[in-house]
Amino acid sequence: MYRFVLGLRRAALLILVLGSTGVATWLMSQVIAANGLGVVGCAALVLFALNFAWLAASFWTAVFGFAIRLAGGDPISLAAASGQALVGRTAVLMPIYNEEPRRVSAGLRAVVAGLMETGAAAHFDIFVLSDTPDAKAGAAEQAMVEALRRQHPAGPSLYYRRRQKNVGRKAGNIEDFIRRWGAGYRYMLVLDADSVMSGSTLVALARMMDAHPDVGIVQALPVPTNRETPFARILQFASRLYGPIQASGLAFWAGGDSIYYGHNAIIRTDAFARLCGLPLLPGKPPLGGEILSHDFVEGALIGGGGYKIWFAPHLSGSYEDMPANVIDFAKRDRRWCQGNMQHARLLGLPMLTRVGRLHMGMGVFAYLTSPLWLALLLLSTFDAVQRALVGTEYFKPGFNLFPNWPVATDFQIDLLLGMTLAALFLPKLLGLALVLFSRSEREAFGGAGRLCASVLVEVLFSALLAPMMMLFQTLSVGLTLLGRSVAWEAQPRDDRGVGWLEALRRLGWHTLLGAAWAGGVYAVTPNFFWWLMPIWLGLVVSLPLSVWSSRRPLGLALRRIGLFLTPEETRPPPELSRLRHALQSEINFAGLVPVGDPEALVPPEAGVAMPRLIWPQGTPALVQEIQYSATDLS
Image (cartoon, rainbow, N blue to C red; front, side, top):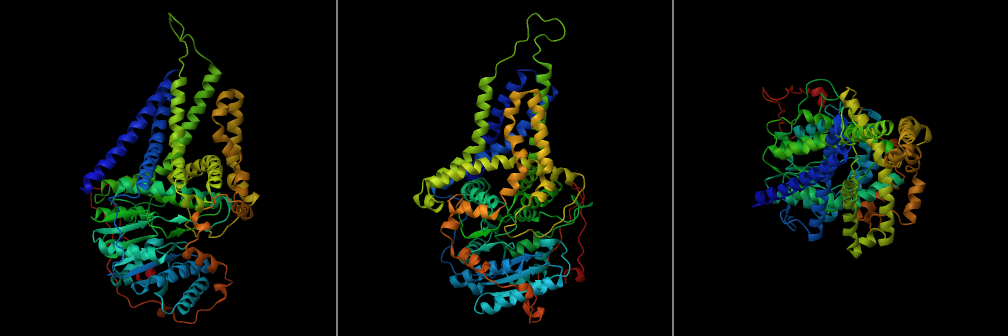
């Protein structure tokens, strides 16, 4: 019955996406054909269809999510097992690399205190798995873990391990844990360095795994929080308001074939060990070598091994930080872009399910949409300029009995514009409506008036930000395809502001391109200039927008007047209150010296073999097995 219902849902989504894309493409073909289709028109039509299909998929996913949230839940979602005694032991893993120990300590203090409140702390051990190369920084991390152990002697066991070489990066770090200690834990719950989870959520995830032996991963929804710059506050607000319906929509059609984000998720350790030994891709980086965005791949491999992967957006108590400014956001996005582009080489893996391939393919296409959108805009500009220069051609070459009168397409243009605006903005209105329906939720977002004002400003800000991100992502895709690999560095975890010189260096070309594009179009075809304004305006204002949106004092001022408030600010849960209190402490771990032997901070080894994936002959690409030496893993 479950598979039948899930099949109906996916069929409905497919029909709606293809149907709406077909209607929009037909309308666009009428508009273009009115003046002659031609090669440019055909190319523009194909690009439009691809872009609109991606937009339609997001739109209908949000509609399904809205319906599920309005109905109070999904009847086929993974059931919670409240009150059930925990059976298996869980290792909470926090891989870190050049992180600020103070931030790591604050997050862990919140997690440990939450676990102790549940009374189930004895079922959890916490591992801080460091890949920090500098020995002095590593000593500060060790001192931080020692301090946590002294502060919480009755809490879960805390362990620390630092590798000398970060072979395989985060995936290699987790693999090292499994090979050394995986046999001692039925589950592992992966956190990022900026993750925080409540104790009740950790226990709920472990209970779900105990109750459902066929489940390999349960992914909680990470809610962005804790940043104060205008850029971060706006994105936190948008994620909190619109994210739940998108997440519920994804869970609606994905079912037990969902995705793994790489953190804030619980994993069945033996399944991961047997199925997720990642290979080296043949060739050089960026498309070859180590798989960077390993999370989607690991999720697809576990699904291909016969386990279910559930997304649990109904679970609260799962949080993460986000970049404080558009430049750091774009840097992180470029790393993700390079990793996702590698997935195109993995789609032919024979062990993947159709939905696993779909998730990985969607990850690739998510970045291809930006160059496709830019190409569509450039073709449209070229066509508009050409028609303005040539003028209306009433008589084509050869004999003409009657003039070639222009065909009016106002109805098609208006309908197409309405469909596009609905696909772009209706999901935001659905998220807003869901909150407005509930008095408690309205108040948690600051009240109806402030909430609606925040939505209006967020829509304007997102519209201005979209062209900037289009160029950033197009550049990232281009550099990846040209063989330019990105450095995988630790991201800033504070409210870092952007100076004018840095903004000019990173965004000056956005401004020049936007000004030249706008000026050229206005000189030739002023009517198209106004149609193109949402694009060139975002590029022209990219410098001041990036600088002003990174100013923490401005973000705090917005908070004081009640804009972009989230429930995590107006009604902070205990784990976030503990996090903020810990961050306000004056402890400087960089000045502390560890007092213990590093070997005393690790448990006795009880490892699990982790076979490496080797694709069979005849598949689209061959891989070689990574040979880790004892030196690499030490």
